[in-house]
Length: 300
Image 1: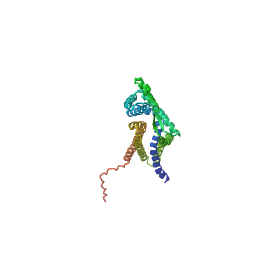
Image 2: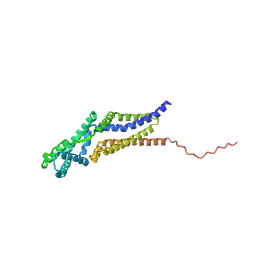
Image 3: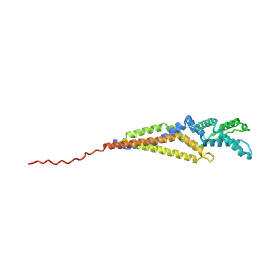
Image 4: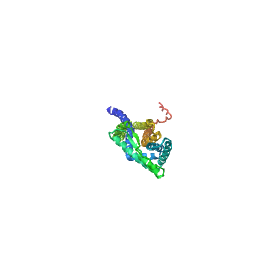
């Protein structure tokens, strides 16, 4: 009796835990091995240098930084600002900008990782002065009058506020610690749940459905995180640029989400199809009724 009851309760519990840990493991692996790795982060953010919204946001930030350092009268503020913005926008289409973009992102990633692994407070900022310096050098090479007199000061853009950093530090440490164990544990629990089940095909079907649902919920969480991120942006930041950055950083996570959905659906479909075929083979076939034989009469 005990041998029948224990697997009956144990298998659903193991499968439920496996389906829960699968999307959490995908999230932990993405945060640790995707976002946390400097080389992968640089490769992910490098294509953003060609994104129009990102280039426009950088042009606005660098122009504002230069205009804070340039002393012109009110009558010249508009023309000088427009000229500077056009020059910076042209610079964002050059190879020099792509190099500066890569350097700035590597510096930002290193600063964020130090802040996440450390205990210090304060905002994490990005200094766009190197980009402004490259713009100045480009203007000088183009022969723009008085370009060599443009002062380049430190223009810091807040990447991560201190409040967000405190929440991120706690969550990232948990994800970092579980990045390897959660996926391994999910796979182990799924296999164990199927093996101890009284009806393994039905358990395999439940595992596939649960994995697909877990992947779908992870996709919903990624979409909800995107919406909340764009909603909480300060009014002076470009939503289009922030959306491009968010989509680039979560591209791998979205792929893993679809893999979980497709893999789970495929496993569930395979278990359902094989189950139907097995039941069809087990249906007994009754013999066709032939003509009734007449009883033999015995003569006295």
